[in-house]
Image (cartoon, rainbow, N blue to C red; front, side, top):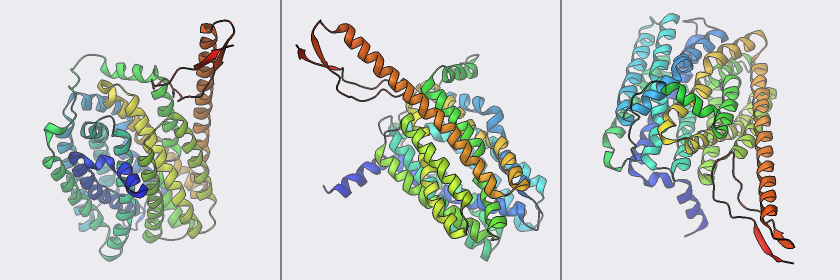
Length: 452
């Protein structure tokens, strides 16, 4: 087997699982529709039909994630209590109906800002259950060993869609109008429903659902807060989520106000970022060894690239920088996701991933209007720059805590070995694998070379 073939097999190994392969194909189609919807939604708010501004774009984005911010922990608990596949039938159907309703209103020319606000909020209610269900369902399809690879391939799906969706969306908007994007998105959910129907339930790695009991939400919060390997990445993700991951707010403003473009410019920026994200997802899928050390380094690189995009003098330079920023952004997301899922107790995984969704998506109701306001008061460059500084501020302490923890563990190991040594015995402190943030990993003991 050639090295290229071996690398390809390792990168795409989760696709050998039939159920996941079906899910993967359905997500490619559905996610493309979702990104078409996102492009059209931002432009709809800024269009002559609704006469919106940066704050309105941020508010529409925020309303899609407000339910996650307010009720995310409860949504995760419900996911832990029910069959994930059945729940996804309900959430995907509801999302399709909402997209269809918005598409019809836009096509008829009767849509108003309050209707956009309402439909965005209802999307948020559906996402309250859909997001943690989709996240945890991946582990049921592929099992623990293939989980990091499957999560990274999911990121490839989402960001392939970031390239495909805006490209098709830009053509549809130019040729037909905004309504076509919303109607296509509604139809795309059928692909996911078909994939769920064709799955073989007997091949799922299902675990018993959590029985109903009092205090389970508080129990999940205490569990995460008392586990540094979960708490620290979640706190970092919350900061990055508030200030950096608001591209549906900042990029339309960067395209229209900074570079004086339109749908084509916005789609091109999204496509460039998506192309980089596909590359980043494939790299992470091939490596499949998530850790806090990797997360902190990726976060530092992501922060730097945000600053580069903010300072880009021309549209072309911004697009090139967006490719590298896309690599860093999806690597950060995939690494954080896999790290949390691997460290979480299976009975707590739904609640842990709900908190991840709160940190990553639920923070949008705070971040999107704030970043939109910053862009209105200053400009889009400053808003993106704030995200870069915040990402660096979140990643540096994460790296410092990891280095301190690593040094402490190494010192303790040396002291214990010295206590056990016989007088005159020579100790060989050979390096071995590192225990990352309290995660139990196999590590050979320090070797004794013999006696003097």
